[in-house]
Image 1: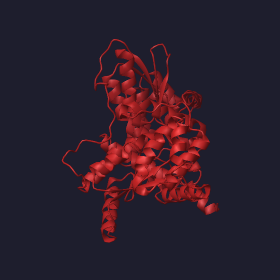
Image 2: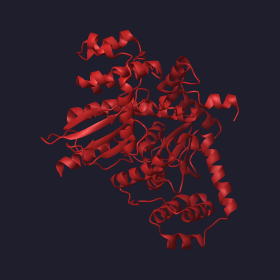
Image 3: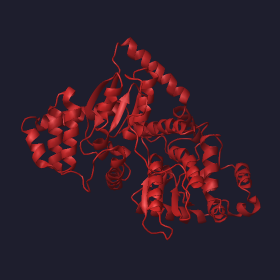
Image 4: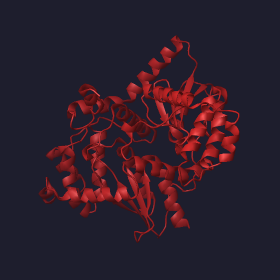
Length: 451
């Protein structure tokens, strides 16, 4: 890889880009005005090229999320006047997976947890054997496009149930050679890369990506905007069936540990939900911030950074917590802000402080490393700046955040925001990663308290 390309791909890193350029990038892709502009241009180009409304679906046979999403693909074509183009893909883009072992483990555990809420039967403690994965890819390589989804659904069920007999029976009538399979997967990955995505279980429609069952509702909104729904029913075709109430009162309490990062768009989106959960559920909220990934010597490829920011902005709008002006705190601003977290947390204002910092960085476009800002933020919390400022620039916070990170990793979580639920005595930990799983956190708390 050339030095220029390497610099370009890693440009979100504090080591290769100025704060000014990084901020401009983040503000650009968080802009809903840009989304509307891109959508309008894409629709104009589609009409000019006389293309049908085509939704692309990327399917990976040994991806647990694809096993879940494949159950909903037909519902999209049933509800909307679109053409579905399935694309078989292979391995994820390695640049985008920072902790491969933890990633694989977490994906499997997550789908096992959520599948039932989506009305899908899925129960597997292990990934499929390679020979069965090869068999599944052979079958789907040979499948006709119009039959792909129905065959892929059946193949997926058999693959994750380790049903060798079924897969061999199907492959006796429908199979492709090794060269064909290799070419098919290479082509699928090429198409996926051109669309600037990196996993399976994702949809693409005219310049925009939608990952898994968690983002089908955004795709529905887009297709509704274009007037493509076939019937008059406008209910979502893909949402989990939940039992937990909006508000839960109980004398019994549960510990909820929250692992935020100051440079994470998804953490910003999650903060409002965490606050609401703290107000409406019987929890002891314990805030354990960690360093941003970029300050943990990780790099994020440009295409992934672009997706993360635009997707988080999309989620924020949907959840009533939109992004505004952004000022990334990577580097010195984050270190200064973190340095006074321990003393603020000891005063019982840890979450409120982090929430204030996130709002400043992702909505007000403020530099949270500015002393005057920090003074005003601390005083807003009802604390005395003279006492808090004694810790400004100290190093005690580093050990605190390092311990927080170790605890987060203990639950196979490496990204933020992550969460941990425990009983009041600290036992029975239940780790969850991502603002997408706020509903699952509520379900787990409700289940523990209601018995």
